[in-house]
Length: 489
Ligand code: CS2
Image (tube, rainbow, N blue to C red; front, side, top):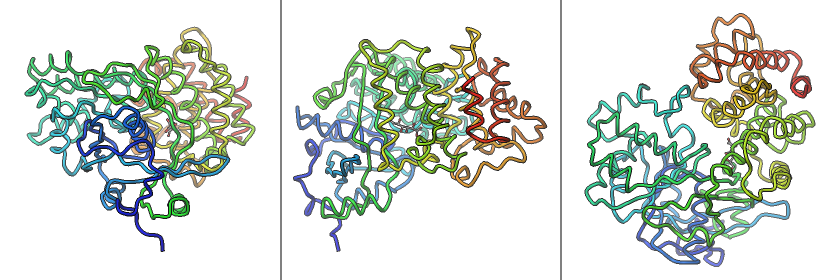
């Protein structure tokens, strides 16, 4: 029997970077695999290079799936890097004093107010920003936020907890940085707007508004590493490599990239010495990532689910999927933005090919396909509008929208296959309600695109709605290869 990992038996010769001191300097919200394979690793390496009190006070959103094992393991866990030349395991030791936000929102608020903490990092996924799909601003009229804003209790939404924490921080006046590490275009600006909207709706005093405006920075950032869910085989692989039983290892690809604006109001770890790139061109990098990687990922996921492919590599190996994705990159995505200076798009796409092909990752198409009602907002409308306004049809963006609809809000009479049931989407019920009673495919799509699920500007583009409807009809009648062939024209 392999012994359960803890500080007394941990294989410190496999330590990645340095152990954190007990003093924490970062509060992190969203303690999932993504953060643990990304910012946590860069922080460990930055502390090895340049020291600093940058331990991470991490909070999971609501489950104890990560917090319970990490507490039992004295905050230690391993990263299992999966490459075609084999797997490697490394130990991470940067988290301290972990908690669960929904169980103790006061602890989150106090941690943000604590002047010892200088950065709040976020990986709360698109849902955590509680934005309105039509306007893109904070959804202050949504039932959850309305109730929270009226209540005397501590807020539980991510943006609410940050707003309350910063409000309390006015007492010390110590500056702070709020760093979004989620897949959002202009992530820093979006976060600043959401916090500002919240403070406004909560009737914050001018002191607080001024403090946030002058002393809190919200840098933009692009974050990239493919990190699937942990399975029993990952746990077994770590036991074989490190000789201890880790109940919460994080599997990850070897590729990793972090591009940030160097706008930190109260200092930062030496992430630059850990490989992160600091530049003023972050928004261009965000476009590269959100469109070429994430947008294509969604297409691979939905076409894969409709083809019975359970993983990204299985879907990517299908000729129809590959040609649709490469067509989408070339015609629908690349023309829509200016690449960062000196950036080699051909090389990037070749890297994407290798990353999506990696058979060891086992990234589920249903995982990437989940939360599409939120993710597609970052991946489709702006790029589609760029073309539509110039009189061109972005066929592959229409295909991606149609494939998502076929999976999560299928037209009457179409069953998208067994995998589709595993796609989680917070809008599933609302979508089903919206399309109930639709008689034609056109009507079906119109009720979704114009039904509050997409920005008004996209809904107003009738030709796009029609193209999505045509492709949905082909997908559901003739299947994926026929639809990808249709989109190619
Ligand atoms: C994926 C991303 O699930 C998804 O929507 O596209 O999680 C992707 O794996 C990461 O952004 C890679 O950095």
